[in-house]
Amino acid sequence: MARIPSDFHDLFEKRTFAHVATLLPDSAPQTTPVWVDYDSDANDLLVNTARGRRKEKNLRQDPRVAVSMTDPDDGYRYLAVRGTAELTTDGAVEHIDELAARYMGVDEYPHHGEEDGERVLVRITPESITHTG
Image (cartoon, rainbow, N blue to C red):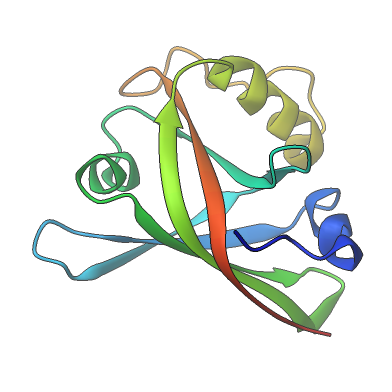
């Protein structure tokens, strides 16, 4: 298991947007821009989605995933991770509220109940990491 370098942990304290690549049923790649977080104790990237969304369906079928992000303050500093995803609903609602605080400046995610499904927490265990900057 690869570890996120400590000098890149600041990316998860900023409003850094990541792009998540998953595989469609026909094995074609599909990407989605997302809010991203990091559980340093478990060394997992965290992404939040709703049940029934394309990335959630793709990951249930094939848990392989790639994530890339660029430092919002330095476009030449980036982090890319390839790994395997595990999906759970445990803690997903609380997590989307934490992300909303960072990305939107609000205490609670404003779209609870408007989604097409329950919240899903995607835990990505890094297997390969590339970075620069």
